[in-house]
Image 1 (cartoon, rainbow, N blue to C red):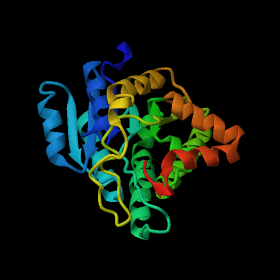
Image 2 (cartoon, one colour; image 1 turned 180 degrees about the vertical axis):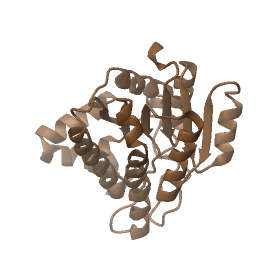
Image 3 (tube, one colour; image 1 turned 60 degrees about the vertical axis):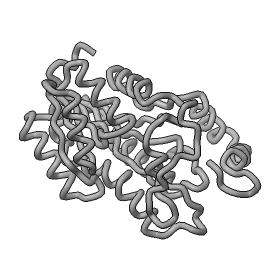
Image 4 (cartoon, rainbow, N blue to C red; image 1 turned 90 degrees about the vertical axis):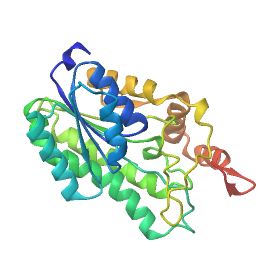
Length: 268
């Protein structure tokens, strides 16, 4: 990653999990990094842990257009340009369609989809000028609808489709557009997942210790960016899910149902 020297990398949702790991990876490889999150205290702690490094922080709710514009404008004022944008900020959910409030699905869509659209649009001219890279941190849920995560799956399908359209538009520009599907990776997203009423559940129903670490995931993402890949699907489980859903969708329905339900109740 020697070519990262003096490059400007923008990462949304950099206060936890994969986003935080990406911030630290790029800083350690000489890039100038800007990141945002809603929790300024966590951002400040991140900045304090990287004293002396070119890290710019900004409190931002990516579901709000004005916040995203303010963030990107502030990055341009601080660093003058943007080479890489990683749309990492996101939120999950855990509730059956029968039980979930409309507002919960709307909130998930606003953060995951519209947050990606807003930040990308405001940064686009700078990235195109630099023949840079736009990344969306998506999910296996963007390839395969997951029970209990209907709004999350919808948002990630939307992200994948939007980025694919953008990639095609920019194909002759020298700008790379890529979407990443980490699969089951250890991060804060499940702890912060919204329940049926739109409140963070505060705990993960899955064994985080058995999953790929955020740091390992960040390394794979950075490597894919360097190689200017189109897509990146991580973990054996993730690749298997994409394969099964593409070629054996009816069987995938049954396997996914079995994975997420026990005694007819959602458990994952």
